[in-house]
Image (tube, rainbow, N blue to C red; front, side, top):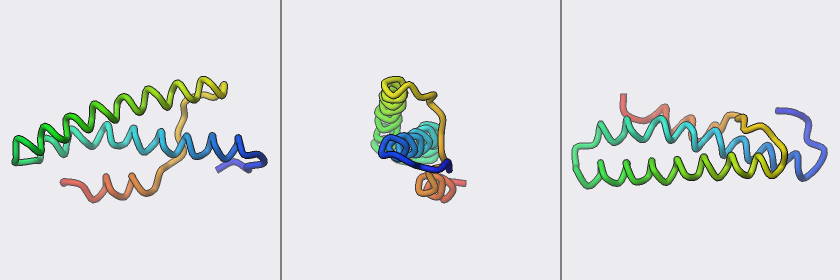
Length: 87
């Protein structure tokens, strides 16, 4: 994590963490869909993945508004949840 000197630095850092978390979910949700036994749960995971894809796109737009590259800083919370997902 780079040294933060301004509120913009903090905002961009948080944005990168959110971006990482959303991208991790985009990768994990299809696996959860596949592992689900209920068709209703499968549909819910698929819908969630579509919404999460939209979140990733919006975050990329926000990066552009701040003249920042869309890169990530690790979101440990989502990383842990994904790690504990289906094996």
